[in-house]
Image: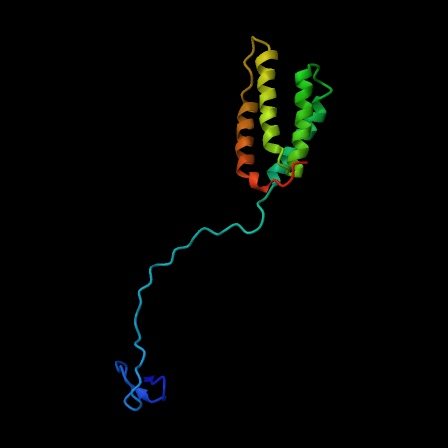
Length: 147
């Protein structure tokens, strides 16, 4: 049973006007809604930086651990660069991407000029360098300061 929206008199299901006051009655319409679609949940808050902390600490530890064991200047420069890169990764500053490129270039220079000619150079550092570069390029909007 429906009632008039103006005077409150009972009206029929299909009545367009009230029989007592003559006011037009709202028509109940059935609307077909499309099936609900669920979007992917938006990320709330900052993304996890666990891998950055692990990689930064590893760069610092390996840099300090290897700097006394290598005797060539490019290898020592690579250790110093790894230490600086580790600290910049831990601090999340904008020097991460340029230092990664420089670290990759120093490693490439070292392998090209100072590696023994009879041995095959290891490919793992180069593959990891590319993976690190892609990882930090995807997160470059999170880096805040230059120093």
